Length: 385
Ligand SMILES: *[C@@H]1O[C@H](CO)[C@@H](O)[C@H](O)[C@H]1NC(C)=O
Image (tube, rainbow, N blue to C red):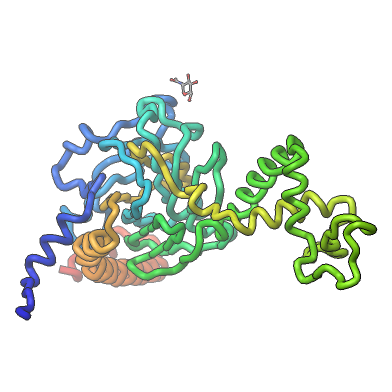
């Protein structure tokens, strides 16, 4: 049998072909981003963004992103894309954020909106599907939010996920998979993962919903429903006694189990209905009935947040259905510039230390020379040349 040989390049092409990129934004075309991003005019006090790579960067052009420019402001800006549903598919939301101002209190997260969002009027009350990313305020709040909209309510992650608090660019990735697992990555490293159902405490929500539906059914139940319930609790291991006389004793029926297999210490009068529900629910596969991370009409991404001290830069936005594509995009953007960014910061830091030391020395000398500082300055400057 001849083996079919597939060259590596063909595999790569196939992979790229399989990925669907719903949105990708690197801000590489100068001021043209203003045609794609809509600043909300809902409040004239909303802060403004500019394109900037900041005080230090890995690459002057590639590191340009949206930077907040005014202290103590709310910000609201968003960009649209062709609406899609993530039903049955993986959803990945990824971007980079850099708090080069050393964030004291402010949001660094993104929100993903339904396609009918009113961009011009975007504000804190605009309904969203997902909120994801870091939030810092004082010593207490240093967390990565993952808020999911489900059945008209917002649900926060119960596991606390720590965010980065330094001044460097970091890559944040959220993966929601159709098997109801999720993963949060920072700088390409998985820092939290698990079940959407449990880590958002949505299991109890579903159970409560199911139980109330079942209870309603129970209340409306006819006699045969009640009999159906009884069947579950007839003692199946009992058999008709050999001396049973049907004519005298009537039809034999297996005895009811005295104590239903239920451990929760329910009150006796509460048992019947709950046990029946319990039995029924054991057989119900609700995972197929409830899609906790399914969003029908995803159509925009935005920054809707508050910052005390501005200067944060958002860049390299990506929404896709392909984890490998997201990995590669992260490596090609953040991965390439993170090293040089630290080098530039290092050089600047050293220069600052040097300058501060020189200033200190100057001040010391000035004090020693007292009122002759004018002459001294001239002398000192000359000496520096
Ligand atoms: C801001 O948005 C809200 C609804 O979200 C609306 O009621 C209000 O009129 C808007 N304000 C302006 C100035 O458009």
